Amino acid sequence: MGQKISGGIKSVDDRGESGGSPSYRPLAQRRQHPELRGPDFVKPPRLDLLLDMPCAGPETQLRHAWNPDDRSLNIFIKDDDKLTFHRHPVAQSTDCIRGRVGYTRGLHVWRIHWPSRQRGTHAVVGVATSQAALHSVGYTALVGSDCESWGWDLGRYRLYHNSKNRAHSSLSSYPCFLEPQESLILPDSLLVVLDMDEGTLSFMVNERYLGVAFRGLKGKKLHPVVSAVWGHCEVAMEYINGLDPEPLPLMDLCRRAARLALGRERLKEIRGLPLPQSLKDYLQYK
Image 1 (cartoon, rainbow, N blue to C red):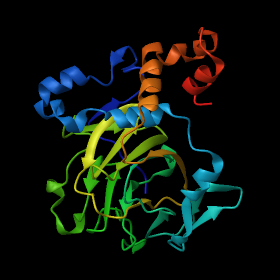
Image 2: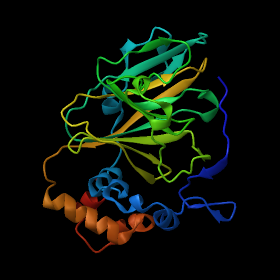
Image 3: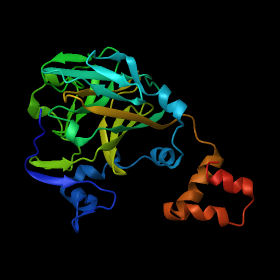
Image 4: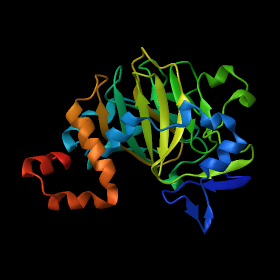
């Protein structure tokens, strides 16, 4: 169940540098991959707005947490941390768990924290309908193996949907700026971005938007899901927030424009602006 990384290695960090050399070069990659100029690789403005909002509170996170009644029997929710599951060390078994909430509309973002040393050979993150299988004999990428789920393999950097009926060579690499023999060093946490209004699934790593992974999800009811094979692995899911599909109020758009003008490093200066306290509170989401 060990994880093997071969070929060249890329890291994605929030500075865009690693060891003094660029690790994420969008301009260079766009020259090499003309498809990166398309809309699938532009971070949606609504996603920017959602990520600028305060994170959901504990009660909301619990409502969107792993579902203890919708899991493989080899997985259990921890008593002292309801956002985290633990997988029993069962050999030759692949096990899944779904989230409590199935999404049909709106934009939703959640964080998956999965320590890289606990991923093993088949660690897949994605979404699934309520019909997707939650257990399989042997070690396999269960999420994305049939037409009821869509997943990103964190070890092979492949996208899976109905993969058991497709040739391995036809499976797309993700992110697409990876060359055939390159690998990506993923951190312990990543963001899953599900836009049910556009019908897309995307991922973010260290604040970098990696582009649309899947399309055609509109009209479905989809739950967060992962499939795991590593014994004693523990995977946490933290719901960040969601946005309804309705147009945003002008006040919200103005707040976003003001916060963008200040920049993240200067948001603390809002307290000293010559503005009414009620307006300063609004700009700080209080």
